[in-house]
Image 1 (cartoon, each protein chain N blue to C red):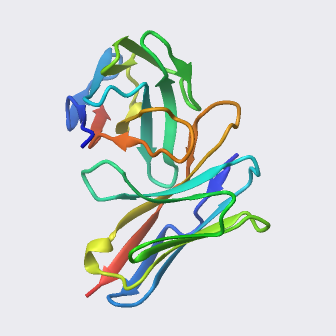
Image 2 (tube, rainbow over the protein chains, first blue to last red):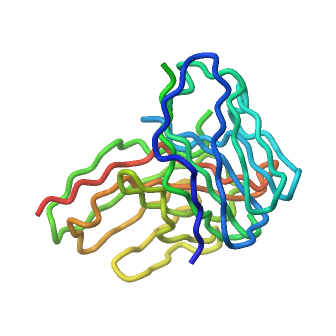
Length: 114
Length: 113
């Protein structure tokens, strides 16, 4: 069974801090994704990666960056945290990304920026 | 511009009855549609999918119907059980300038015992 693990379930940070959210998958998946989930807005894609060291912007990349140095690990970085980045962050992975294949999600990190 | 819309934020159904969750989309290039279920404090999990060349797919108590001309799909749960209480996300995939999955806003289903 695919396991996607996010390093923290809850995180509280201060405005202006640099924040790192880590995600690890154990199934050798090519693709990894970062979403944020906000009430009434569903899941919005921040960044995704289809290979090591490759990254693509999603729909809302502003204020974020990512790093994928190893295939199993995909990090989301908030360069200078702001209160409007308070949200639930979800990491996901998939093998190919094409066809009907679904994504496998971690349990999320609830991030609060004070 | 929301390409995948779930217009009902919530739905309440009696145990044993049918739950119908609706989803509309705007992009005719989508190839596949998926439903995910999400419990509180957990990530979404895949439930059922349908190809754009089909109009129905069934898996146990869950059936998804696709009406391409109306750009509408629905998820039917029969019979509904209290354990089905969760948020349901409709999602669409296809080459829309990238292999992204577009998610709707979600519908929270309450199944009352």
